[in-house]
Image 1: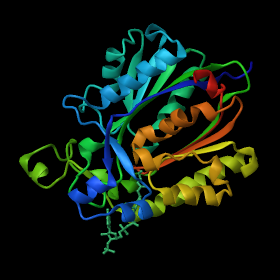
Image 2 (image 1 turned 90 degrees about the vertical axis):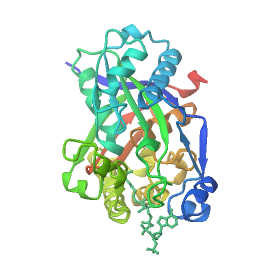
Image 3 (image 1 turned 180 degrees about the vertical axis):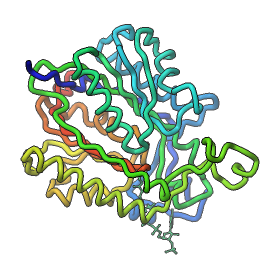
Amino acid sequence: MTKIRAAITGVGAYLPEYRLTNDELSRMVDTSDEWIMQRIGIKERRILKEEGRAASFLGTEAVKELLQKTGTSADEIDLLICATITPDMPFPATANIIADKAGLHHAWSFDLNAACSGFIFALTTATQFIESGRYHKVIVVGAEKMSAITNYKDRTTCPLFGDAGTAVLLEPADEDVGVIDFINYANGMGRHYLHMKAGGSLLPASCETVKNNNHFIYQEGQTVFKYAVTGMADVTVEMMEKHHLSADDITWLVPHQANMRIIEATARRIGLDKNKVMVNIQKYGNTTAATIPLCLWEYEKQLRKGDQIILVAFGAGFTWGSVFLKWAYNGEMFA
Ligand code: UT7
């Protein structure tokens, strides 16, 4: 019996309109456009400003676009997995809320928390349901309102993050396309260097936790940077060696967009020309679980059926991983 493969058959996204520029940030904290461009490579990021709108709003808008452009009815969706670290609320799952708002009446749904590796982990989870033969249409959402957990008085973290919603449709592939392999890792020792201290069962919200800024991202930047550079490059090389791929065999590398220097180091390590690396960090910053699908969405028109693509991410946990896939359609069909 031939194995069923799962293929991405469409990508949707939603970006809030508000652009937080480096110049505006420079008026909020002691930083500059020059420092941010040199050390991170971000020019601006989108921020969801409207009151009452959260990650589910971003995810729902992305799902609606995805259903519309792929001509899929909401009732056809079997399962929705939402990768997020900025859920609307601790429970219920943001995936449940998105499914309700987007009218997915026949889908069950759950959230997955793997921070910046969230999309890779959710995609590889969703792939298993398609490969089992029991599921035919699964949506993977990456939706983050990072501005809700970013401290705009902390110059070491506030330039990094942005908000976005993304969604991809996964279906069984009937040709030689789709997800071929994945390699995922997690190491909980990374929790010391990148986390949010309060709001969980360890340190529930109190006046004290609010006063101490414990509901914001805490990051030891340099340490995370070192692990990220090694982790992203190592898992990309591991995937290439496993499948006997040279840089010439790769049509696109789609790296998590955390820092331009990490992206460049990964590409350099595998000897890949920068024209083959998807980059949009300058426009959106680090949107955590949304960066990789946001790249696929932006570059979609350039993608061709059969393109050999490696997705790679590293994030809090630590979590990291890569996916090797063959693209399933000519992107210009959605032009
Ligand atoms: O996606 C999840 C994983 N996260 C990541 O991959 C992020 C990994 N880390 C990074 O990208 C980088 O570590 C940062 C961008 C966060 C920081 O860059 P860095 O080159 O590692 O800077 P640093 O922390 O070593 O700080 C260097 C200097 C310090 O000043 P002193 O102590 O040398 O006087 C900082 O206070 O830069 C200062 N600094 C800033 N200066 C201007 C830190 N942030 C800023 C800022 N503007 N925004």
